Structure formats: C-alpha cells, structure tokens
Image (cartoon, rainbow, N blue to C red; front, side, top):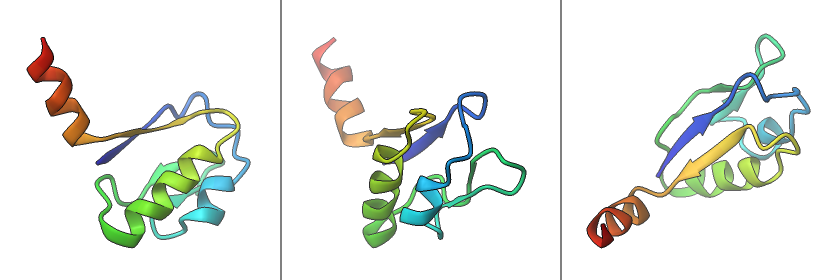
Length: 73
C-alpha cells in the first residue's frame, strides 16, 4: 500500500496525526506524509488516519488491488 495526499484539500483537523503520528504530521497546517509506504502496524494506523480525514485529503492505494485492476484491462 501507499499513501497519496491532496495538500490543497487538507484542513489541518489533525485526525490523521492522532491515529498515526509515525506516518502523518502537520508541520505547516498541511498534512505531510512521513512514511509513504507503511507496513504492519503503521499501515493499519495509516488506514485509520485516512478514514478519519473529514476533508478526504488522504488516499490509501492498495498496490495489490492496482495489480488486479491492471490485469482486468
């Protein structure tokens, strides 16, 4: 999995940081990704943080799903 961010959409609520402080940060009132491809517990926390974002500024891309979608084309 990897994380994509729309910094323009970020409203700095901080829900992502609260859920995954090792993965996300808000240094300048815009989300910053500290670990773009988290694994294990960090991946679980990253997903929670993305789901809690009211601005939907974070997108979790499941690399395995991408491969499946590419095979269907």
